[in-house]
Length: 488
Image 1 (cartoon, helix red, strand yellow):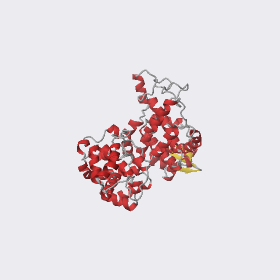
Image 2 (cartoon, rainbow, N blue to C red):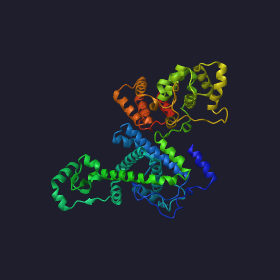
Image 3 (cartoon, rainbow, N blue to C red):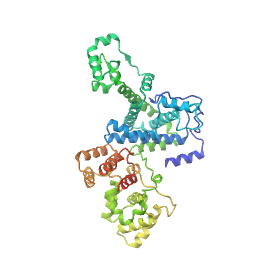
Image 4 (tube, rainbow, N blue to C red):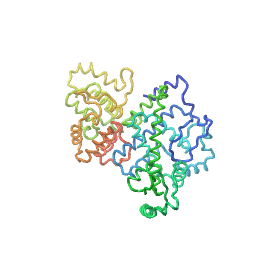
């Protein structure tokens, strides 16, 4: 939706962002390191399309980080599962890889002297995208304390993953360049604190130390991995990662508060505000699934008929679709919002329009003439065969979560958002989830309003045969069905 708004605007007036040439700015913007503290805002001009797409790509990465953290992935498993997602949406190579590319391609990789258009294979351009996408999302997620907290947490995890995978020499050079204001430990201090430092050095297998104000390393102080003396924390070099990571979080926290002050000026540009609002809302369950690209479930068009839909419910439906189907069966009717949500779901899993007419007619307890007058046209309209002939797409999790809440006697919406605790637990037990720890974990994600993460957990628990645990988080009912149906 917001993409269409951008295109319409772009046709009518000058672009706020210049053409996609990376040479149009007189300044040279180079990125000497793969890691970045994002202290300096970007100043080059980019296109509206790049602004939007880069933000969406980073959003996908941060959403997957949040999802895996909520599902309690161990650190190594977290990093391993995110590697293909990072390679797809935010790839960053080392300086060594950039040097190898330069030796095989004489084209300079400096931003100012780069190719005319953004080159996704150019390491400097990849770092440019990383730089811009971070600052774009700052604008979206600085607006509330909760969004700031979530953004800082996800970005810090992303920084940690990159730090751990970086070349040690480049990592050390980056830390040295950041003006982290640490002090060396003098010989007299080393002698005075020798017993404590030697014990800590033996524990950490590192005899080298630096000192900082103890407030700057709260995690290390809490874990007793530093020596405290006269308000200073004496930190082993082996704990440099924790110090740098904490510094990253602190700087980003302060920067987000500064960004809030700039928001009133942004309100003047009505092209940016809808996109930023969309991104902020989408953090709840930003959908990475496009049913149009998938083209429906392979083979399902010949297999899914009105006569066998009932048999698919328990095996392949997410809880939201199960709820509507059971509501339809029990009441012999669904109100408008549920018909729209469920009807588009059925359409995109492969139920043809003729089979859809049979399905709805067999489940509605109304006379034939009433069905023809009140429902047949709307069903055909959903399939793009009447009226404006729009090929309507199914609702994503974000659209369902942020859509209208069901009133009494209605069955649409997201059950993880709308069900009471007792009703949700009973529904999950009906799906075969009885372990108290698993139920508590799902309810914990519901309490944190991470409804799509709860749904992903339910899928993993009810489909242990699906080995693609590292796939992207489920953010769409049709994505849930597709993955389940392929397992049969």
